[in-house]
Length: 304
Image 1 (tube, rainbow, N blue to C red):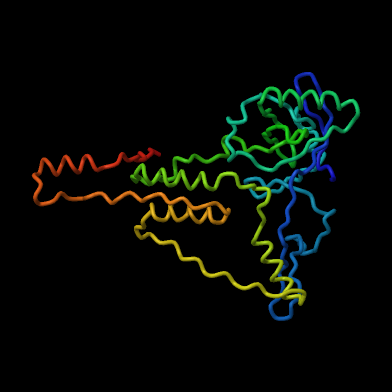
Image 2 (image 1 turned 90 degrees about the vertical axis):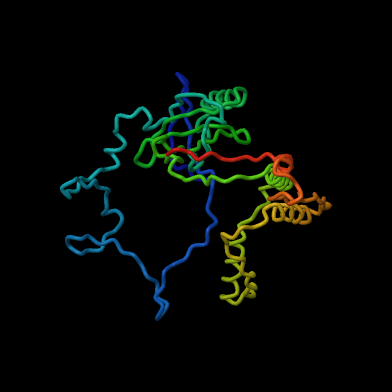
């Protein structure tokens, strides 16, 4: 794997020379734009707005546009000479419990490898310190024209760097309206049973079924395979009132059947009476209604 960045981990007064290697790779199928009339490739060309000339990549530099529309060129040397301690170092600033990091902050992931023999011992020292403390390290580093926040943890004896979004880049969830609804304990119990049934699935065995189907379509169009049969159209989402208990119970049974487990039938709760019989007195009817109700859970609306 080709490194994309080289520098060092700064751990107090300890310096660990490392190289950064992408920890993930994309298996997406790429498309090109073509002309519908003759199938010719449609390309985007880099053209100067002033003289109309098409430019090579080595003739292009980055530039910052000011409020007046003037462009100021910024070279790689300008960025390399920024007075930042993190320009060539991943500077650890804190050790925190892994649970304190909101997953919404986590971005791209990279493997960190020791680049020199002298880096082997401090690298191993940091790796074991992370494992023994059961914590992750929060660090700052500069990469791709900006300073970033990062998280260091251990995976399979390798130190992994996860890019983190800065706290002010995370939008507040208060702007999302949470429905004010009531659910019964029976419905919650059924949902928990469904969650327990779906527990234990090995996510390492999951596949990108969209990509698999797309490869079949491309194989059929190139004459090396058969066109896959279209899937049955799923029922559209509806706002109609549905029997949640029945749907949850059926989902549990379907999940167990898929995994080859015996189905266990849970009796559905009988529907609660909404009105007392005419032969009951108002007091008796109220007592029966109160005794027949299940405890409910209600989510309180949040204030923005």
